[in-house]
Length: 176
Image 1 (spheres, one colour):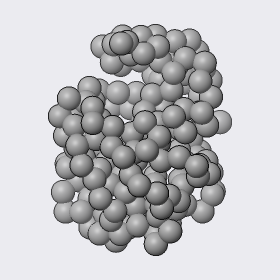
Image 2 (cartoon, rainbow, N blue to C red):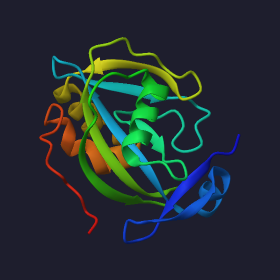
Image 3 (cartoon, rainbow, N blue to C red):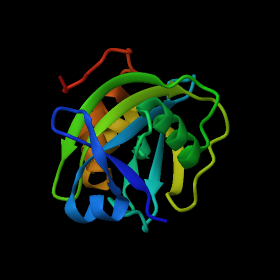
Image 4 (cartoon, rainbow, N blue to C red):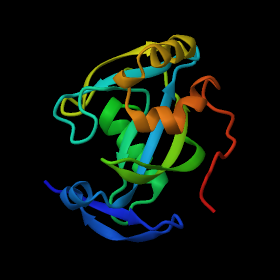
């Protein structure tokens, strides 16, 4: 199944749609969501992506999330992705910013969220190989010790949210 992905222009506005395969092949700028999942003890959920992921396979990640579908609102996409990837549901997803990312493999506008979830984490087998709750200090130390083991977009866009233990709710937007 080739999802139809929402494209975004350089000003951060929706600008069309394209099949996921084309978005990847041509590195088209698209919309994504990134959700940091904390528990009530302040730990963050860190997971390892499966080796079959189309971008950054096998790396560790501390954000759930994924592409926005054509016509999908960011809040709806975040809720869908948090549930699909980790089984997170029934909690408020608090928006904490909108940031851009680009490298040789992917270009996107990321709508960022944090939440507090104390339920059972359920991995989507196609996307998540394993995972565990980790203290922010341990996660920051692990990223510092081996940054290449982590998804680079999460490190660049969301690492500053980790030490906040769920974020302050402040918008760290880089879009005007």
